[in-house]
Image 1 (cartoon, rainbow, N blue to C red):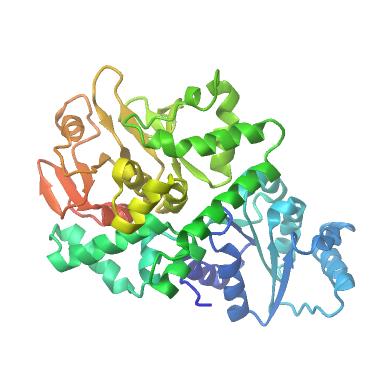
Image 2: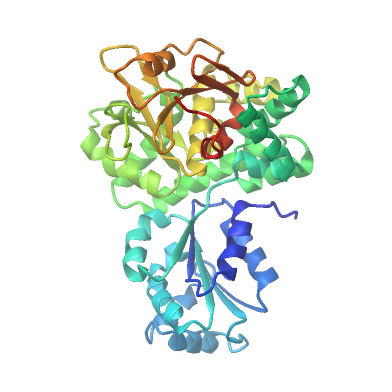
Length: 449
């Protein structure tokens, strides 16, 4: 089975090389490749790896029976498996499926102080258990958030190197339109990525077969697994509510007004009853929440209405897998996004922003048609981002830029199916450039008033 290069690979190498590095916790939703990436790094970097999976071998939950000190844990592991060895400075402890045994996080403090061994913990659904883990290990760990593959990792899987990606960024920085060939190749790759999403099992199948064959089956199994997680980890009556919210995301995104409406989830549903359900799905890494700004100005944090939001899937492939049969057929056979066109592109842009480290915010003025999909920022400027299903005029974007009301905004970005362009303080980029927006804004590209 081919290994798919991931961004965590270079992070793990840097983490190990750093002097006095702390135990590492790799967080992220299920099936995004955490275990595979860490195990590959471990086998290539350490003489000795102690791998413990708390789901597959629950007996190892007894290793803290005598306390959380490193010597107690080592002693108890060797009791359970006398064949294991622990040479100092050459051994990595890899505790997997941490959500099944959050208590082990208490031991990270002692491993950190002891200093003889490296430790990596990994697990899904950690958002749910993380408050307990955090309180048990605060100050003695490093965190890494892992997502499904972004478009850059997808390009690596398809054989494109960093030079290809640097060239895309260079086009953006110099506002040089892509040639017809470049545009055709990138649009085709991006559309495949939209249909597949970034789950490694789906991407691997596609790369190895060269077709979409089997991809939908894997996506649907992932959806079934996510729903099973909700049943397993959510408590009491919230299970049904969380599943209702999860199932409502595609039909609500398909509407012109994409604001998520709790009232549509169930008869008589109210926000206060469902607030925890939305947070649960977000903590589990299944959805991205895009909050409505009170007013489009800096700072963004705290400047939003918590009862108004859009919900996007954290992986667009999951949205695709939940479409009805006819939309599925149309999408895969004809690459026609139909009624979901705006929703799918918005979902994929939101996903790209989150994976590059941006928060999600939108704006809708109650007394007018003014509405903006997303916002990004530089140190001093707020930049609205419009996702256009067709290459239209972007009226709201122009209003935000030209009106004196919005003093933090002087430029905008429009993402379309077309080419690179610049006019009236609006930078236009193809959809496939969304994953590079944060790098573009950091690069001193000349976006000044």
